Image (cartoon, rainbow, N blue to C red; front, top):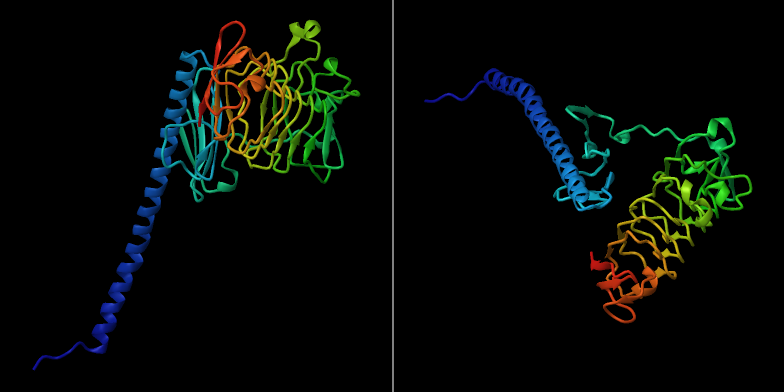
Length: 345
């Protein structure tokens, strides 16, 4: 007759299994977590390679390379040939196309800079450069509007401005006329930015809805100020709240710029006389003012992601187009016979 297990034997087996579980579960968990960290590391290195290839390709084609990308909810701000993008991140390149990347999968953060690869557990601050905002006293604000920049203050005389979302307790929803214009180019009431300005970063202005008239106007009378056109870069917020880009707001702007999804209206002459070579029109745009890109002689390509027909002859300020009236895609020709492509996106 066969005997069953005694209670002591069963307890011994359970104890042994418990010990094995205590040893095995952390090991398996660590293996899973290491696998996730390894996958994120591979993604970061792939993004480094893709961004560098895109930068080099644009330079070979004679285009102004994209030097900064953001990734939000698995979608990149520019064209990257990479599938399965991480949840969030930033990619920054220098003038030689050398890149550095900060990406997060929601649990881990990987930051690469050259051969250095670092992991961070703090995903709330997974950025390439920790944000240091320009002092609030440098901004003139009223009724949730940023009305100007007080560059005469010694502490504000900087070449790089980072604008916070909230200034003096006010959520900034609009940048008013001439807010960051060059003082000699307008009646700026004592406000403005110096001609030596290098960058104005609005990317953290999550409440911004409107960029007003002449905000980044580099000069008014080009016959007078042509010899002193500054070269500052503007970064726009990407959260979808920005709705309006105002009249002549980026007049004579010198770089390519990412117009974020969410923008509805691009007003008269907004990018006239700019040095933009390629521009993407977000799917949300429904309204253009007149001659938005007038005299932008470097512009070669417009990516129309709206799927809507517009009067591109008027928007581009050119002499003729391949189709009369409104159309979605086609070509337009300037008076000097150079061509601008309008393609779908």
